Image 1 (cartoon, one colour):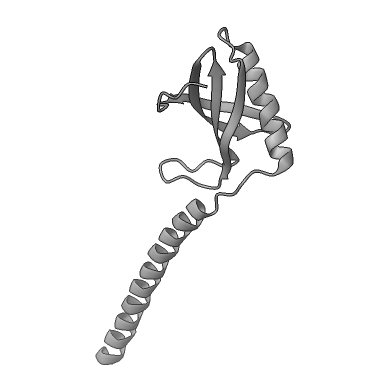
Image 2 (cartoon, rainbow, N blue to C red; image 1 turned 90 degrees about the horizontal axis):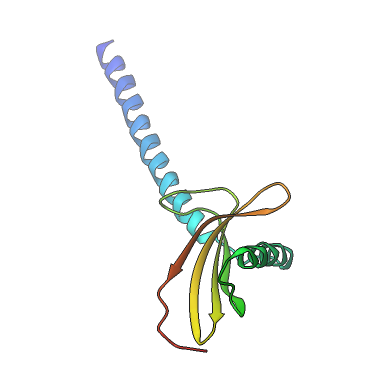
Length: 128
């Protein structure tokens, strides 16, 4: 009787350990899948985001002469802070003899896009 109980307990322990390992594996796979799940923007997303960026630059005191999207993607997940409907956009802004580069984190609402964060990042100093 004691050996059957030991066998049952050992079996439960083994299955619990295997389940734990599988759970950890799926968690790590899900994080990796989230990062590799980033995708390019659709034409409609890009158009809507361009309108939001245009409104942003028009509202600035020092407006650029022109700006263009350098790169952009829909971020399915990011390690530090996974956020649903997050878009990452890098923009080159051209002022009089100065090029500035900005990184935007945008969120998609029900009917419009919202700028979450804006960061200026270092440019190699090339003027255009």
